[in-house]
Length: 152
Image (cartoon, rainbow, N blue to C red; front, side, top):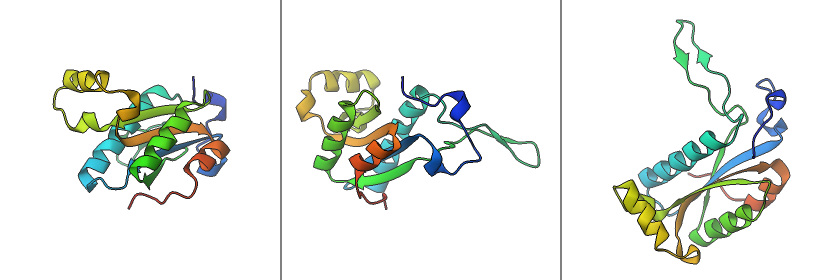
């Protein structure tokens, strides 16, 4: 299982000091709303699965609680369709990486079971991805995403 041990969670350290790096790579050609949706969906899947990503809740001066955010950060990058597919394939091949992806079918169906059926009928080499979330050791993740630009 990929994640942070409780002893290594340090909300006082800069994000670059974290052992693991989290990136979300999004199809650069998506309209803003679809890109935001794809990013949120893969982030939700990642936060649910990767332990220790979220920091403690914040409490404001009036006592209102604000749920914890990623203490080690998350970078959202843009890539063309083929680069996105390559990143997903390379990341999925590494046992020390966690990968969550959003196939295009997720935004082209309105019923979850239809999404599942669509993916089940599509060969792995034919799936189009809108976003890929990757968590893994910092240096290998940096090498994987290279010099991709931030999502505008």
